[in-house]
Image 1 (cartoon, helix red, strand yellow):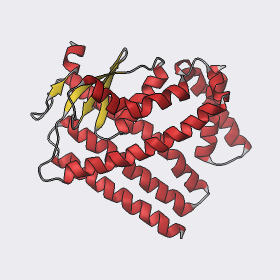
Image 2 (cartoon, rainbow over the protein chains, first blue to last red; image 1 turned 30 degrees about the horizontal axis):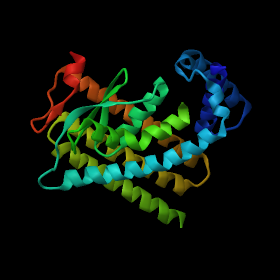
Image 3 (cartoon, rainbow over the protein chains, first blue to last red; image 1 turned 135 degrees about the horizontal axis):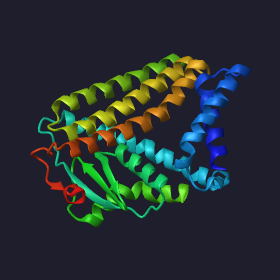
Image 4 (cartoon, each protein chain N blue to C red; image 1 turned 180 degrees about the vertical axis):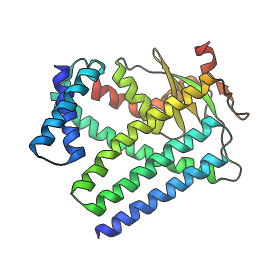
Length: 161
Length: 108
């Protein structure tokens, strides 16, 4: 079932990328999609029936809006730190605990954290994310865990788990 | 009208790319430079691609520009993660102004 889902997704992607709906193009696209699904489908979701549950798409759209907003905020944050004459930075690597279980959800959370203001995810070891933060605002683990993951974790939980 | 919107988006994109480049020069160490490189350059390029999409409308090139945005997002975030992790394991120290390093105990 996983293989079929990856096949359909990669075929849609191929058609969007080439944008030519002729028979030879469809055949080449299907061959490429079969190769992709044969190699990569084992790393995909275990339960692909989640694709058929509409409330997940609703949360995904809300998540997308929050994500774009955080992205724009991140850019102005970096611009402020770069252009300020004294460069207000207090960098360091902090450890953050996450409650997400599946690998795919952790990946999405790490990627979201990379695009939020001042943070890049360095590594994931078990349940702990290591985050490089350009301006550490507090020393208390609970406070900064809420600051870093709070905006995204609950939406990712609703989308994927 | 479409031309106007696309020009605005492309201008925003170039401005953010420029800020990212200034950040790469001014910030003190590799880790902080990656921050500027990832965020500003990603949103700058996405903005330029959106401008291209508005310029060409619903056609071949416009849809391709739109499809390129999620690819760019995932590629740049994963690339930044790989670079920053590789930098740490290569043995480059955090800059002098750093105040905290939790990762040191984890990789020991």
